[in-house]
View (cartoon, rainbow, N blue to C red):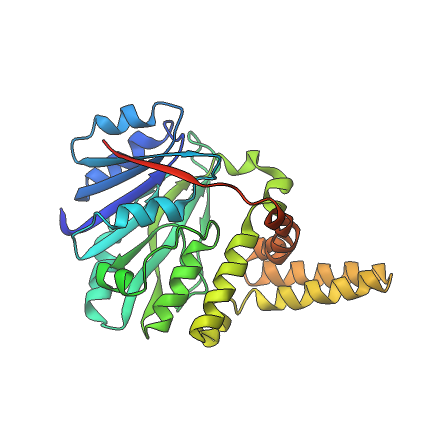
Length: 305
């Protein structure tokens, strides 16, 4: 049992998977915090059955619940040396924390570690897709699940509740600003039961609120003169940006064939580097910027159960 690790679990309406998530966490740590973002199912009732779990219930009005908000609130309750973040639709591998913790202990400059996941399309399927890179390296991402030293998390300022998307990269930028590093370890970290994604569709991908992350993160980069870290983390996304800007030029010039060819090249590039989702990244920022003209009022209530 890991006495120096707190597992933070965030979720909303995940009662179909919560027992698996809580069981995997309970087998690894005594300190567990579950942040529920205004669930309307039986999530809270399930969490109350686990004596180890401290429950924080977020109630908001007219505001999109974000993982960054939930993680930010929970992290303030942590008193252990390490934090393991995980989403409620995941289960942790039983060996991951010990493997990652040893690596962080051995290397002073390492602040956090992330591993690979098994992605299951449904709760009952035995078929999965491995979401992994080929080797150990300093990654261009910090996924929704990772182990981090609490002191480095605090030094970086923690999660920014006002960054609803790309919140992990935002934290990663500030970790690098402090001369610390994140390592990708080629070990299984978690299983992800991603049964909700397929219901979101292309409109959700393109018209989410990703613009908020872009402008706020970019503003902080300018303010802190952290361009080197930005280029490092977004190094694989920048060629897609160049392709999208080139495509906009071809569109304005009515050169539709060149525009399509440019996008095909960008898609092939994304597939080759194992980052197919990047093809939508900059497009969603541009399209979702329309929400800048329709800001939401934010009201938040926090309950410790």
